[in-house]
Amino acid sequence: MLEGLTAMAPAALPLHAVRPEGLAAWLGGLPQPAAAFLRDTGFTAASGEVALLPGLDGLAGAVVGLGNGEASPWAYGGLPHALPSGTTWNLAPGAGDASLAVLGWALGAYRARLHKAAGPSPALLVKGAGTEDACMMAEAICAARDLINAPAADLGPAELAAAATSLATRHGATCDVIAGDDLMREFPTVAAVGRGSQRAPRVAVLRWSGAADGPLVALCGKGVCFDTGGLDLKPSAGMLRMKKDMGGAAVVLAIAEMVMRSTLPVRLLVLVGAVENAISAEAMRPMDVLHTRKGLKVEIRNTDAEGRLVLCDLLTFAAEQNPDVIIDCATLTGAARTALGPDLPALFCNDDALADRLIAAGTAVQDPMWRMPLHDGYESWLDTPFADLSNVALKPMAGAVVAALFLRRFVPRSIPWAHLDLYAWNDMNRPGRPEGGEAHCARALHAMIAAMAHHHPAPSR
Image 1: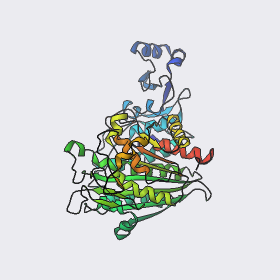
Image 2 (image 1 turned 180 degrees about the horizontal axis):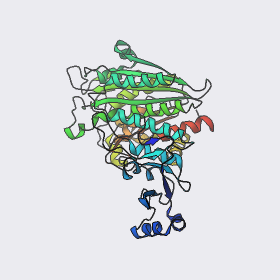
Image 3 (image 1 turned 135 degrees about the horizontal axis):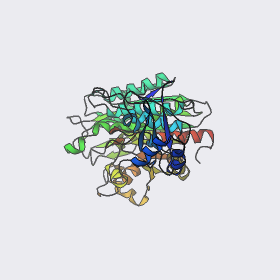
Image 4 (image 1 turned 90 degrees about the vertical axis):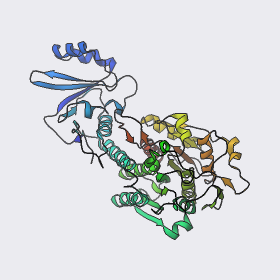
């Protein structure tokens, strides 16, 4: 259930949203004392800037700035905690967009509450008519945040797979969970990554149909519930946030929820590889050679490069279903964060039309990504004399590119495929983006899938 939103509230106070270019005219319509107050306090209508409006009997309303440029949900993201606790607000007619307000407000009101006592209640916003999609997206994103924020002691492979099963049950989908001997046979690299943990690995396979003849969209999510690095142990600083290493799985589940609740005319295949990369006598070792579902054999040069091993079998399985598009999401490399920072996922894609659609969708909904090259010149860096390929390159450069090239080996060139290397985390509190787990790219991918289903043919095969 979303915090910060409410249904009809007749006594709600008016919240005015104003752009800088419309500020003078808007001030001209206010009572003179209120207009003078705002001028004297220096209100400029910068994005997210908020001011309370005094009245004869106390609080008469508030105004939030939208800033210049494209309207953003983040302009509203700080309001649940900037406005007085216990107050209720209604977006006044004007420059504000009700859907953006609801989305930004709900995401800003989110709090990780599993192990933390509730603080002051956020101010409430009345959900206006026509904001159902915004509420739906906020709920899916907040559910993904809850998964990412959960400590690894509370969210292991079984619990992550159960989250996929629960999602399927709520929306009339099917979900098969593959474990044990079946997993070793069908997803051998997933089994190999997870064998060092007492918590057994598994793969969740969710299927849903919004139209029998709709395009088949395959989503693959890296679900490493905790990553020690394996025998190539991470330092303590590198391990600190590794509960979020299942962020790719949380993102694909959020996308699936959005698609199913939107009843888009597509068929969905969602694959979650749920494992823990732990240390034990059973853990995979450097220079072990693993067998993959595709038949390629992979030499392990670094046990901390386990995410691509989880994904390679998922990608192979997805490709066998002959989908119209495959998209994988993963917190895969620190190199992507070094290149692009925490907010900008790295997009690798084998199909220009698909890449263009993804970037356009991300720009349109302000959930951006940046395309990076699948540079063929680095393909040989994965060569090894002991197997078909290595899981890492020995050169300490272009780590995100090399990881994407590894994954590309498991996707036929005839199938449009996109790989998103994302952070799934907010390092600090910002309006609408509290510190903790984040579903980067979920809104963008939902928008792209909606556009593909309703307005465009599938990318060229």
